[in-house]
Image (tube, rainbow, N blue to C red; front, side, top):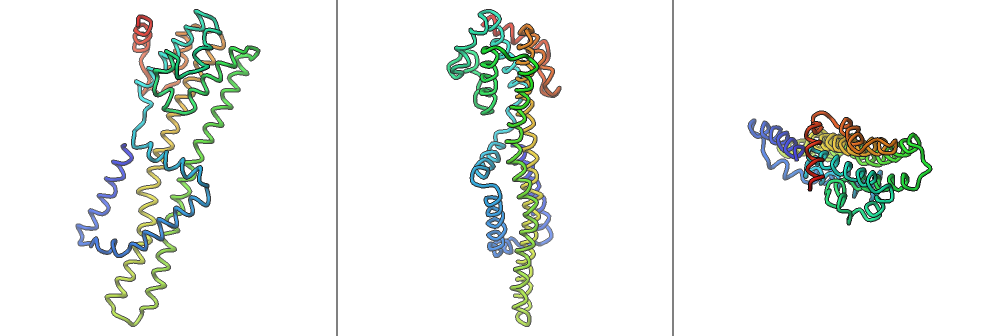
Length: 288
C-alpha cells in the first residue's frame, strides 16, 4: 500500500507545481493521442518481449502490492510455532507421524490453519511438504538435503526475478517511447510552419507532453513499483530460508526448539520475534 501512497504523493507534487505556475490541464486532455502512443507502445513492447504468462504475472504482482507486506513479526511467529508443532509430532510419533500432515496440508490441524504459509506464498507449502517427504523416504544425508533445498530456492528466486526484470526493462524503455512520440509530434508541427502561431505552439506543446509522459511514467510509476516488487521478493526469499534452516536442523536430529531457533535467527532483526515471544507462543500452542 505504501507504494501507492508514495506514487500518489509524487504525482501530486509534480502536477501541483505545474498548476501553481499557471499550467493548464487542457493540454493533457488534448494530448490523449500521446497517452495512446506511450501507453500502447509500452504495453506492446512488454507483451512482445515477455509473453502472456509474464504479463499476467506482472499484473498480479502489481495488484498484490496493494495488500502490503504480509511477512511481519506476527507471520513469522505463526510460522515458528507451526514448525515447532510439526517437528514435535515427528519426535513423538516418529517420521511416519508426519504423513497425514504433508499428504493433504489443507486438512492438517497444524498447517491448515496457517493462512500465510498455505496461501501467502504458493511455493512455501510445497517446498516444506516435498522436503519432509524426502526425509521420511530416507537415504538422504543432511548436507545433500540442504544442497537440494538451496537449489530449489535458487530456481524459485530466478522465477520471481523474471517479473521484476521485465518491469525494469519496461521502465527503461518508456523514456525512449516518449521521445518517439515527441518526434512524431515535431514532424506534425513541421507541416504547420507558416500557419497560425498559436496552433504551432499548441502542436509543440503536445509533442513535448510525449517526452514528459515517458519520463514521468518511468521514474514516478514503474521504477518505484519495481523496487517494491524486489523488496517483496526479498521478504518471500527470507521466509523460505527460514523454513529451509529449520528443516536442515531437523534433518540433523536437533530438538524441535533448536530447529525453531535456527529459523528465528535467519529473520531480519526488525521483524524477528524475540526468544521469549517464541517460547511463550510455543507453550501456548502446547497447552492449547
